[in-house]
Image (cartoon, rainbow, N blue to C red; front, side, top):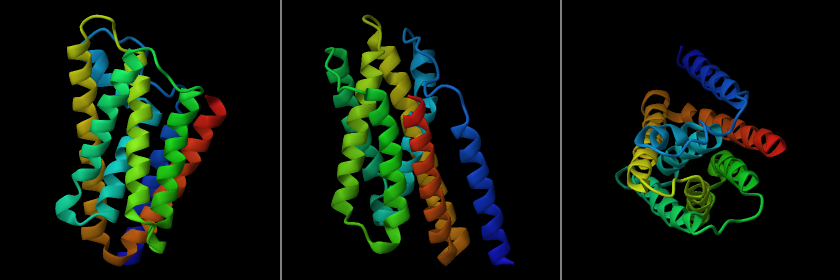
Length: 200
């Protein structure tokens, strides 16, 4: 019965991510002039999946009482990257780099069974946050940045929490089989990242 339940959860999760991967645009719109646009902007596929992945990785790689530290680092790097983006400084192929972060997060989750060094995970989280922040900052308005910034930070926090909740739910309700689902989710994240790289 438990095995059937784990299979059902895995299929549902895979279906949801594959549907998301089929969305046409990696961003939820390029208007960046209000609180509403800030709230909506992180719901672009690349940003959204990366933030969910941070929460999921944190639960699987860190002690339960420290799971918040992954999202905290991402948000700190996100703000630094946003400031850099506001100054007009950007990496080449920024869209490709944000999609690549999904591939890296997926690889981290898939290799969790082999005990990937946590330090490597921290590096991926920090660099991903920096790149995503630069993308946000580059599209931020020249005026009224406070409302926009509050909006995308609020949505980012909610998505991180969703990732943590998903990881904890898998651990609590699926016990040992949760690692199988995490590996599956990691593989789908990587595929979604490769899909976005090809369409960036």
